[in-house]
Amino acid sequence: MAHAVIQLPPDQIAPLARHYDAALAARRRHSLIVAAVILVCIALSCWAGEVRPGVFAANAHRLGQYFWNITPTLRWDSLGADLAEWYWNLDGWLKLLFDTILIAYLGTLIGGIGAFCLCFLASANLVRSPWIRLSVRRLLELFRTVPEIVFALLFVVAFGLGAMPGVLALAIHTMGALGKLFAEVVENIDMRPVEGATATGASWTQTVRLAVLPQVLSNFTSYGLLRFEINVREAAIMGFVGAGGIGQDLVEAIRKFYYSDVSAILLLIIATVVIIDLVTERIRHGLIGMEQGR
Amino acid sequence: MIRARLTPTDAERARLFALHPQLASNVHPRSMFTVALLAALAALAVYALWHLSFSIGRLGTGIGQLLHFVTLMLPPDPGTQLPLYLDALGETLAIAFLGTFAGAALALPFGFLAAKNVIANPAFHVAVRRVLDVLRGIDKLIWALIYVTVVGLGPFAGILAIATASIGELGKLFSEAVEASDRKPVEGIVSTGGSKPQAVRFGMLPEVLPVLASQMLYYFESNARQSTIVGIVGAGGLGLHLAEQIRVLEWQKVSFLILMMLIMVAVIDLISSRLRFAIIGRKAVTA
Figure 1 (tube, rainbow over the protein chains, first blue to last red):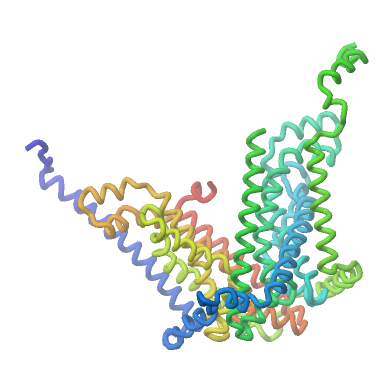
Figure 2 (cartoon, rainbow over the protein chains, first blue to last red):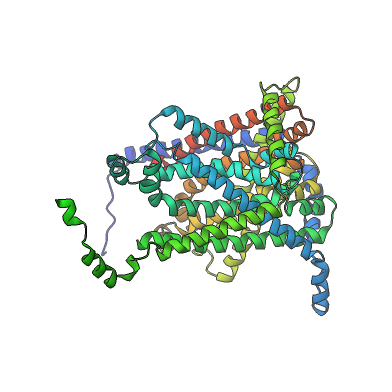
């Protein structure tokens, strides 16, 4: 034989085998406990979430039926007419989509400017006073933890129906989310330019303008664009609570069972989101390239 | 003396400008571009403000109203509705947990089907990916609205909505985790005569499972936030009461409900980040 298997004597194997079995048993016990905890959680959730499998099974076909209903009837021989019928309100929807994008743009811009103003105050390396820094941080945290749609609900009551509460809700949430990211960028800068500026007697604003800003601007833009992508999605649902954009028509189509409209609007939203994602991704990659080329 | 030496004389300056004419103008071509870009962005913003009919007057009265609401919100008080709200909190947790869990369970097969190194046929895994894209591309609130019309009002619609969108999100992440996994254990199992399912079970699953579990927990955190708002369209949980109380202007209850949401989200973040650290170690999470 070219390779004989080396066999340990039985008295050496026995303790090793016992050890192996014990380790295996401990692992099994561990997995069983985890599985039991998960099962208990599922049972509790099913009870709290009013899940009734019987009712669901009885109505499951309606789910398939719904998706069948929203798919438009398109026939080869009358494709043009069918498409025209499916997108009967294309002009109106495109206008609403345009509004939606503008809402996202304004929300991102206003929120971004707010975040820009606050982020320097929230950075530990630029602000010595912990009072200012921590209070700004808590404010940003509040702004980003409360969901946009909740702000939109509140603002619709305060400002009235329309795009304005939508823009403001997006702006507030964006300020919180971007403010945190911006502050993290600022905290990671190279401090030597800052020390240099301070050493020549520059004021705090001059230091920020000349020593901090050149280091962070491309990162800020990149995060801002990323936020714009997210805000376009969010702006599409602002209409659910009356805060403008395409959501208003979508909610009406779903509630009133205008089946083919639902799929038409959904496809339009998805297409818009995909196009905007692609465009901003290109710009962001360009920015990163610029950063590395320097 | 040194300062005098460093400053160029007029003759030197003239020679310098002759050699490098771009120094004579203060305007750098790149800063011209930046100014044009900023002007375009500002013009678009002004157009948007006009198009969306912003007005200073409305803004002023709105902010006044808002400040008035804030004074009415304090102190947060549930009134006699506390048991109802605790019940809704339970519903919200159930929506987040079951939605994430069901979504993850369904995303697991999708994750393997969409991975290049499991299914070699490109047409198939690209098709699976597009399906995941659509599931992910539709917002959870839209799914909730759709499910409310299909299965009726209540938390079950919320669970289905969160689960559907989670299939898209987690399916994509799972497939990326599977694609990034080491090929060698799989090859080892195939070389000892293991079948394809065995190779996935013993060669791939032990490596990707901790990653999948931590991603699932991460989405549980994010879904907990989403499950507080699906109620706005009638899919159960805290959002239902929140939308209702805002409509009837019960501001103390509104602030109490928002406070409940914030505390719930904070507690879930804490627990889930602990669990994530326990599963894959602190280093891997922060990296």
